[in-house]
Image 1 (cartoon, one colour):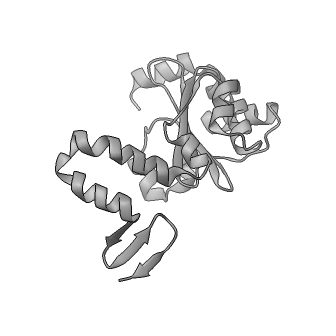
Image 2: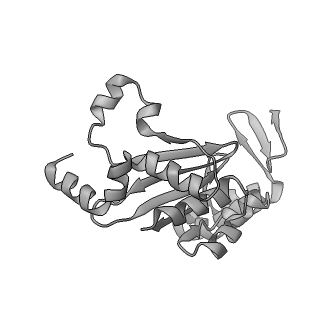
Image 3: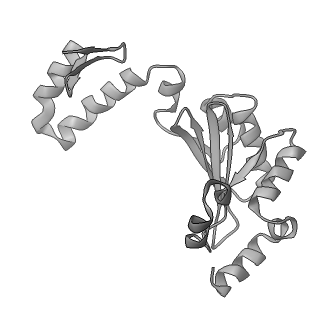
Amino acid sequence: MNSEDANNTAKLYPDLLAVGGLAVGLEQALVEVGALLHVRTLDELLDPKQRKVIKGFPAYAYVERHERSSQVYIGAERRMFLFDFWQRGVTLANGATPELKKFAKSLHCWIVELVTTRELAAEFPFVKPEDSAEAFESSSEVDYTWNWYEDWIPRAHPELISFFEVAKHTHQVTVHGLVIRDGLGCDRK
């Protein structure tokens, strides 16, 4: 981190510097909103050699419980917490707010209260669900994806229209000798 970046960080995040960084500040904010969640840092995920390589890496924190998680970064030019919300390895929403406590409350709702992305966005206007989030949460992501391809293929790859039509009507695709049927299972061909 160069001296200009360090000065910006000191000006934008004096509260975080006073407590020891983003992870500590977020953990304290989570306690204030009633969420006892462990905040991890990038350093915890790396070995010592990797830590040396990323010296000066932007501030980062990660929270996970069961199938849900979130990662957060800080903005460099203005005070902003930039984050996303995940479930079972899929990004379902993202957002940004200058207020750490508001992010902490949204994180509590996501990870502890297990709200949907629609409920999260209704309570926290700075949260923006992905277009596919509702389909994922209602277990209709296969239909959503077929519909997305049906719209996208004619525009992006018209040469695949006939292949898509066959796959859509048979509801199966053969990949490397496996027949995949609408997520219902696989058979060897």
